Length: 368
Image (spheres, rainbow, N blue to C red):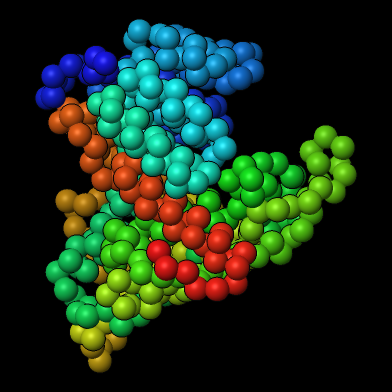
């Protein structure tokens, strides 16, 4: 099959279609339109009127109703998918089979089996993939990764992760796909997928885990009838992991904690300690700070070097790191091979999510 781009290293504009008009309009469309190599040429919503509304709002030439319609457009060379998880596999499969490069939202798919199948199609058709694991591109997180690589904490002793927010704390928030385990809903998919990715990135591979998934709000109102409907997806997760090197990692996730403490990563080693955290409940990216302490000394805030800072920030903190994800994707397309994070990293995250579900169902430790 002909590659969606020409020779590696070309600097031509890449025509991209955005699939989904929710998060797609909030982040994907504006982020892609900012990038000098990307041109958003199509947008998809199964409701044609909504697709046309989004296309008009963002000056996009094609409003599409199906993925088949999108991939048939000759000017579409790449596809950016920002739909709920249960749609990821069929939409990504259609795009990759048509030879389109792929940027995919997390969680990757509904199972590692689906993610591996997508990777196989991408490799067969020469498609370059990317996953929107944006913490890899946030300045404070990048500096944390550098300090860990430099051996600042020495041999790891313990890692503690708390990610406690109130996004689903109101029991009157309407029932939708997020409330359904079979459609990829829940806190594990929404934020745990990120945590599993950055655990692998920052600390290494997982040997085994023990997970407990909790649904603290068992019903939610149907948005049309007001009738209470059962919630099958988790809103809270307690996960213990053991890394391949033996390091214990404890993860507490919840989207149902009023005044939750936010997002914190604590790293303890035999030479020192690193803390990364944000108490900002309204933004996944804005508000992070990084502290460091050599063994026996007090924590001091770490200044983030200018070379890691965003050239521009936006009211929605997710936009600046997403633009870096896009730039990384473009570099991969130019080179003819996927760069991290790609579907390969998506498979790692998805496998750990699958394992957490099985561990919670069986109430036992499982090998990764």
